Structures are given as structure tokens and as C-alpha cells.
Image 1: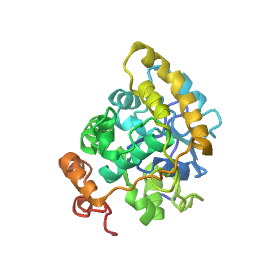
Image 2 (image 1 turned 60 degrees about the vertical axis):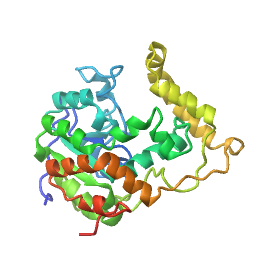
Image 3 (image 1 turned 45 degrees about the vertical axis):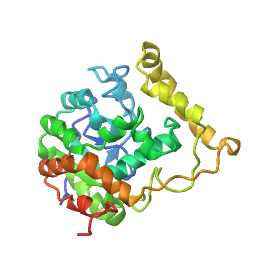
Length: 312
């Protein structure tokens, strides 16, 4: 239990980071970043996802551009960020290991099929990059390999643990955000060595949900354009992507708010039988591999169709 002397920041002199949340995407990283950022001993930039270490247009060994995001940090605050796409970026993780050799690494995990379905909903309804209105058809389309790959935790953790010692990697389970948030937060505060007695105001809030409610589907042409820019491999799309996509995402949020451009289709629900079949097809063996590497019991994700773990 950490309630005594605060951990001294290691990031100040060289603009590195004291902790990094690396994903996986759609596993509660927004909630976690909000709770950590509310702690007085922690500084997280207002822009949660810096996406710095895996971006060849931003990254430089001097970390000059990274440092700018932490100008407002206090001298005794720990510095960190959450970019969920780091989890699947080999070059990003390798750069973090070089730049932040003492950093603590935070990993979020969620039932892999639920994560994949939430990912689909996020790109379909929030980012307007998924033109396919049917989940299973989307898995068979151009975006399908990406949806699946981001849920292969065993494969990803294998690379993480090659770069970072196990005692500096902390795993957070999405199920615990709803079931035991304060216990989860206390353990996380202990891990990065700050006062665990602080209760974040956002501890019982849900942040950035995309897979429920009644948001509306985007126009297919808008989604197809986003897919072309985000997935295209031509020289034009690769060069345009870092400039175009932030503006595209902002326009997407505006488009989503215009009733004239909305249809009446509410968000789909994931059928338990489909969840079970997809788990068997893509994730069972990989999840067992992940369990062994981080010494976690995720058997309930295999045995319960609804994807929930039993309470401790």
C-alpha cells in the first residue's frame, strides 16, 4: 500500500514519461486517464492521446515535441499519457522503452469480442470510417483484420514483455471499471506510487462509451471517404493522412450532430451466439497465451457467453 512518501518523477530532465497507457483500444483507457489526471500528484495533458511515439511525423529522439505537452506540469507531478494504439505498434513500444526506461506501463484488457464490437461501433458511428452497417460483413471487409488484430492480447503482450520487465507492467480489466472501480484505482495508484487514499471525482462515471445508446449511422459516402484516407496505401493517402484525418474526425462529429444527415438506425447489439462463435474462431488460443504471460485468470471470458467475469 502506498500512502507515504511520493514517488519522485523521473521524467523532468529529459522530457520522458513516468507512465504510459498503451491500450488496448476500447478497453476503458479514457476513464482511466480521467481518473489518473484528477490526482494532484499526476499530470496528463488535456489531449489524452498524444500518439507521439508511433508517429514518424512527430517523433524525434530529442522528444522536443513531446515536452511541449507537459509545460504546465508541476515540478513534483508524475507525467504520463494514454495512447491505445501503442499496444499494436512495435516501433512505438520500442521508442517508449528507449525514451522512458523507468516508465510504468499500463495495459487495459477487455473481452476480445466485446472490444472488437465496440471498435466497430466506434469507427462506424463516431469516426465515420466504417461504411458497412453489418458487423459480420465488416469483419470480412478491409477493416476486418484490424478489428481482430487489436484484440490479440497474447501476441501484443509478448512484445510488451520483451521490452518492459513484468513488475513494471500493470494490467487493468475492463470488467472491474463497472464492478469495483475504487479497488481498481487504489491498485493503480499503488502501482505508480502515489497516494491511494485520493478518490477521483470521475471514479463512478462512464467516459467515452460508443457501443450503446441511440446514436445514428453515418451516410455511407462519408464513411467510405474516411476509410479510403485512413486505410489507403497510395503515396497521396499516406502523406495526406496526418493532416486530413484530424480535420475529418472533427467534421464527422459535426455531421453526426446534424439531424438532416442522420437516419433512424440505432446502434446494433451483439448477439451472444455471435460473440461465442467469434471468440472460438479468433481469440481462444491467444487469450490463454495472454493469461500465462500476465498470470491472470480470464477463464470466465471463455466460459460465459455474456463475456463477464465473476465477482471476486
